[in-house]
Image (cartoon, rainbow, N blue to C red; front, side):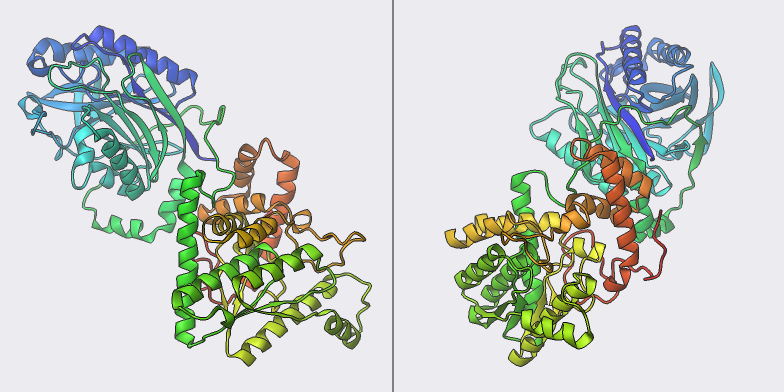
Length: 632
């Protein structure tokens, strides 16, 4: 599945007390081993502590630092973790601030700090030299010969590639991690000693998240803690794990005991994002550097106690406040897109079929918003309700009330008589409720809408959503077709929130009450006769499966190119309290079958705006042959 558990550690330290420091480092390593962590990042100069000052120029400290490294190596000979610790390192009479990177008792490489800060409260150049130009070099240690040394090192395993930078390196115009990422590193470790100032933590967090987004990488950040010297500054032990712009884990700063935070990194997703983003690929053409790959292999990359948060509803923001902001943005995109099409076609009227269901309701709300934007009379919005064999009183009444309250030109055309005539014309038994029975109604409605649009000189607005398009849950050349569609990249789970947003924020009490009842109505095309009590018998989710599952499948299939097995793994984790494994497998099989077999409908979609990161438009986002075989 390409998930790997990483950690950021902040051990307690005593300034220049190396024996104490390595004992605490080893405690953190033991904790990480118990947690099945595979990559562990410690703070800058954690072997000695960062605030040793001129003690860095003492031979005793340098000598004891190397002995400490050897001690840690001896204690981790059987430890299946890639570990990086910070230490001073003397080479050819030049002192460097470095990261020792080791695995199972062997130093894989030593990475020097590229940029040495020497301003404000920082004066590292008093002791250390920059390692920016050190590449393709080796050094001999007392206990290991020919150790790779430089800023060009990438540590390559069977699951991910790792790069290292140190503190200030992140804060420069083009951080080394940018080059490391372009050279193939998926996960960046930053050993840091970043002091605290008012609001600096927020800036630091933003910097790390932005760098992980720009590099399409995971960024593991570990900073020195409160036990550093406070002669002039204070350190907080800030620990952060970020992935492609998202903060996965953060500690509470100012802790006084050993602390390690962990998170699973989705390496598959990072690789997928880079593969799809051609600008990332093109940026590698500007590289004049060649990476020095240091290969190693983990003993065990199995997933244990998978605790990463997997969002059930990836299209919907988790917080109510963020959701409202997102919904407002989407609503404005839809309205502005339709406004442009109306202006371009010089149409003063819009035609839309209203069923009392979610999708047509959202489309109508977008049209009303658009007409307000263009200062057009809402009586130029021709709303048509077309009752058929399965229309219930609830959906019918909601459609009527909504159109009247919004001030549209409401018309009613019952399609029962026309459908019965068509059954007779084509020789179909009206009591056989098959696909012909259903599609006759859908196409009759579309014919009416198209003809009225022509008659009125208006634009027929489509109502179908992204989830229906993914499943092909529409009638080809029926409700599948329109002159412009406003919902084609809105998944069903998000449609609900958009309608709810309008109900709560942009509607009067009467409209809001109607919208809330529409939200409570079961999703149905109402193409089969209602039951003896007048209630809906044809419920979409009973037939094709829960939309929350299908939207989840769609997101991971399209967004990250996830395999079927991976989607199944993620869905089982996300919905473990909602659906059994058998149910998830059943509906995943259904999704895959319908997605592949219904591409021909998506290949003939009308125009419509893209509002999120996923769209199935054949003109840009998703081009797939209509005769591809479904994946098993």
